[in-house]
View 1 (cartoon, rainbow, N blue to C red):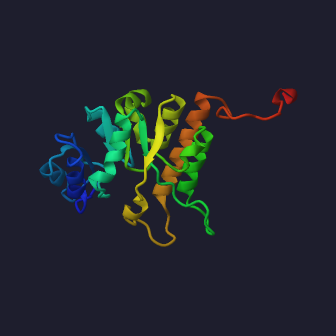
View 2 (view 1 turned 90 degrees about the vertical axis):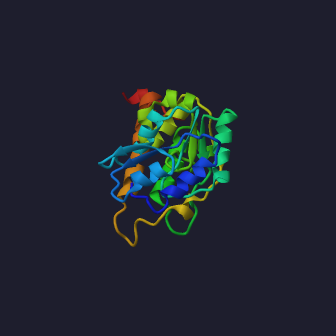
View 3 (view 1 turned 180 degrees about the vertical axis):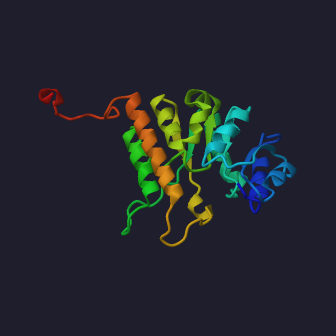
Length: 233
């Protein structure tokens, strides 16, 4: 959405990944000519006049994709092709969900960002504390066709839920490569103003936790230690 400054360069790097690579640009709610830039740059464009909302474009793009490896990018982050290839190679070697290793700071004198904490908390809750802060909320990441079929295209619109589903379905989920997207992400909020996107992402993680406990048990398969709750019922 309105990424004319960087979109052509993002597509240019994607084209370097392999000959004839399928590039799909989901352009939603743009008023800055992004649609035309994507077409001229050689992408297949899926255009919506109205904004779809955060991450919904991933589900749309996946629905139209025909490949066995799907790599997800954002239109405002220009990442060189050589840094993207490890995600593709990982899926080709058998990984189902290949994540960015970027974890974000959690041990600072000041409080860690709620989104970072949410990522760590979800991975711990679903039994994958080894992933630390690696998340499908963060690009780039790649998924196999097998993972897409198991998770369901519509669930990509809520990335933490998709990640919880991938783990619960015993897919191979790995943090495969490090790209410091924090340095690439444009500053959209300054000062102490509200952060609606951050609240949305934290809410997505809560939705993922709810799905996971409903799909497993009330404690998400974690032990209740030596408590015998039945004695007070």
